[in-house]
Image (cartoon, rainbow, N blue to C red; front, side, top):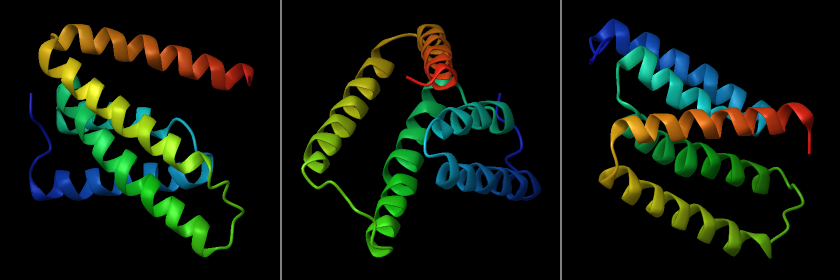
Length: 127
């Protein structure tokens, strides 16, 4: 159910997302999961909406701004990976959105939970 959609809730939610954005710049991996969970818990989005918003906000804006910042800061960028990373990102986003529009919210939720567990486990064991 939609919640916290008044100006105070939007302000607090924006601050929460900004904090997650700071983590995104610090940790570099896994914060999209926090954004999705935050959108579900704080604003009451369903999984389909939250995943779609996360793909747009984190995938395009946060990562795009981070990449531009790294370039401006003079980081050593391995340019041959860029086309493959962009292709994988757009293809994965398209396929994910396509499947989400055809499958139930329950299946999307279960898939998200399994993927979150696998990624968390992989980050903990470090390979």
